[in-house]
Length: 428
Image 1 (cartoon, one colour):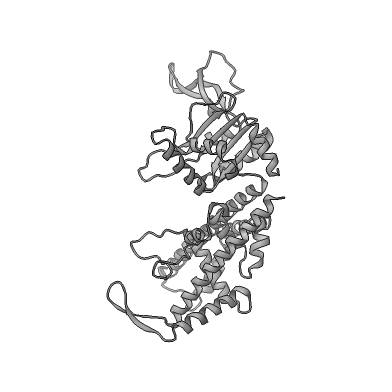
Image 2 (cartoon, one colour):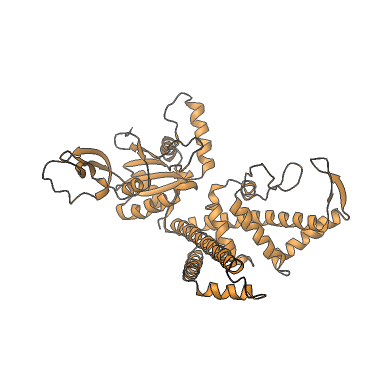
């Protein structure tokens, strides 16, 4: 872990500055969108030809410094043992069409080098790539920096105003210009940031394992019910279906394997969470925010430095207020503009608050319910958007209003505490 003075000194001695925009796996028009790299040679003060990385293999090759950018023909009898298998282009043997022979091999490689400074945006699909780059950068003597998206947006607007006809205003070039002009807007990627990325991967694994186990159990139950009701004898253990099904589950090899995999994923997620200060120092203060809920929130928010204000975080989480003072909800045929995983995690957290009177946030929920009930002592009937008369301010309505108000206050508290933690660790 370097101090700010150390990595700023390393930035000042950079040989190359490389702006990277991670690829988009699926665009609306289905057009390919590879990872793009703009490489600025600091010694010659010029941009090198722009590079495009089409897939994960190309990204990994770049990390390891062995991404081919030029090719040459194979000479007869040449020893190809020094080349990686996926770098050898093959062609059909003219003497035997069923056989393939080497045709081309790399002539020039590109990749992470000593003295490189990598610039990327925070969040999005580039976290794993940034993890690999940061890990390799420590070995070769390079540096990986990331900036909040709102900073990048502001700088892009500045460049567009100053150079409206500039053809190099894509994000990879903008990142290079930002590093040179606004280095204080960037944050380095070190072991602490990599631990957060690893926790997100553990969370995804845990969700995948849970879905696989649930799917297997559902398929097993459907097959079990079908065998009972459609048996040739027409008999079944009346009143004991669930007990019989429990025995079937206990003896099913596939289901037990998936359950064991889920348990291992839970253990790995807990270990990854305990390695994060945001979990131990911030979520550790919140009774009811265990690893399942906390990891979902952390994985969704990713890095608090992505959000300029607590209001933007509330909107991202789906606990903001609308113009009429109501809280947003998802309606049919409408697209929600919040993160669904984050909102779901907060809803589950609110349920934990409701079950825990006597705790800080449990009491805060009850205070908000009292506030709304005092403000709206009796239910009233009003017309909804469709002209139908509906009841408002019933006990259930008051409960929901208080719940979302409490969760909004929790998100604001989380914003403040997470930023305090980041600032404290940046001074270490």
